[in-house]
Length: 255
Image (cartoon, rainbow, N blue to C red; front, side):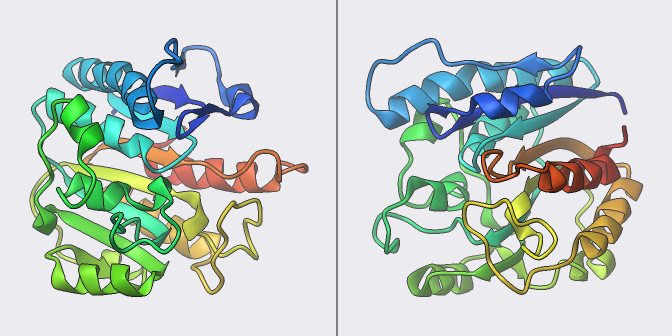
């Protein structure tokens, strides 16, 4: 399947100009024209045109590959998938659960909530702004999720989300017959391999282990959309983490 790359160089609603250097000829680069409203209003203004781009690409028979600055942007990608009429299985690779709500989060960090939002838990402002419906929990797989807050862990246990704590479990896991949306937060990689992370979590899978899992998923031929939540480019002075992460992305979607 032919890829169409989209770059959204923002962390929540804050620009990440260093990410713009990734853009190659033919890539679509998103921007935020509005500076009005509160943070989530601005994020909605950023995600709505992203969703339209994702839907247009899918309806044109191509695969959207979205490089973004944080995991909340996956909500915009998912909105676009829904606008194209697809109901995929979401595989969420992340060192964290992103399954907090305002009630469970010790920090109150919005970036720790997007997966909960996507399944209809907690804050729903962004989903409502984008005209989305929540994803059914039994259509979500959290892969790794080794660093969880206590109440977040309990919420996951009580949910219907499938939590595979070892990424290699996906190789033998019987995936439902459905298209796949892969969300790849690069902090799932062990920080010994990829250190330029805002929220590093020790004891993660190696890059080589992830490559094998990604190649397996690519071999299914069912990956219809990919979102990659990036490393911190300000910390990546030698571009080692960027090179590693982009190589893993290639394992998922090809060149």
